[in-house]
Amino acid sequence: MTKFNQIHIQDCVTGMQELEAESIDLAFADPPFNIGYEYDQYEDRLESEQYLDWCQLWLKEVVRLLKPDGTFWLAIGDEYAAELKVMMQRELGLTCRSWVIWYYTFGVNCTNKFSRSHAHLFHMVKNPKQFTFNADDPAIRVPSARQLVYGDKRANPKGRLPDDTWILRPQDIPESFQADEDTWYFPRINGTFKERQGWHGCQMPEQILGRIIRACSNEGELVLDPFTGSGTTLTVAKKLGRQFLGYELSEQYAQNAIERLSGINTGDELDGVENPLTSAPSTAKGVRLDDREKRKPHRKNTTQRTLDLK
Image 1: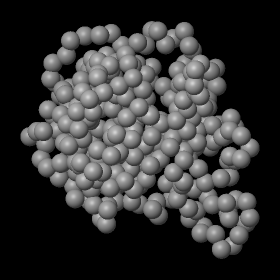
Image 2: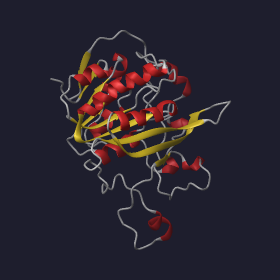
Image 3: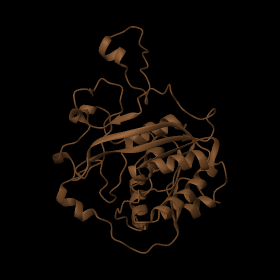
Image 4: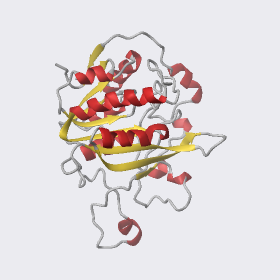
């Protein structure tokens, strides 16, 4: 029987097939985008149909594992966002609660088109009438314009739920976006940020996972990440008192993730800051650019292994 609070070094489809159906409360996946990124143990250059067939395999397992009131979040890029949303809804029977646009200013610099500065986050549920969404949790609410701008006594003192556009550095945004607006401000993890682990190029901010896990699960429930990567999902789940389970092909990534997990405890604060005016640490307080080469993982062959994180 698969144990929880572990990283399993194996293909996620094979691993998830070993789990009991309807056993997961919340799943979050940030899979390879099929854009040619250099991963340690994965080829990110599949033909489109091959990539979509593979996505359908692991998505079917995620749906099978979700409890009747379970929730799934998918992070994905432009190339396959539309296809995967249709697949999740029409073929796999999930319902989309929110299509979040995560905007950031340190995007991919392009020369022949507008520079990319966003990703897609799909909030999917198995049962559109019964799912966990902790709307009254003060940790996921933001002050409303009535509170901050107008001082309106009718404003809900708890604030309001955030919008579905998440803005990372409002100091770099046109004046139409101000810090007192109801948006989500989270920094993308760049090479010069102190939060950066340095050994995985696709690291999600802890604050984004914090809001998702707080909103869509409760303490003691089980959070799954089929693509552990840098270990952010599992790290945040542990800090917030959830059980967790991850799969990772790369032994190097998994070993680094377990070291990250071993250095934290339930109740620890999440990395990163929520104040938009200080969302981007200076290079002087972060990682030097010339240190990044030293942190690149070494390739090695892997076999199926399990790392116990209790």
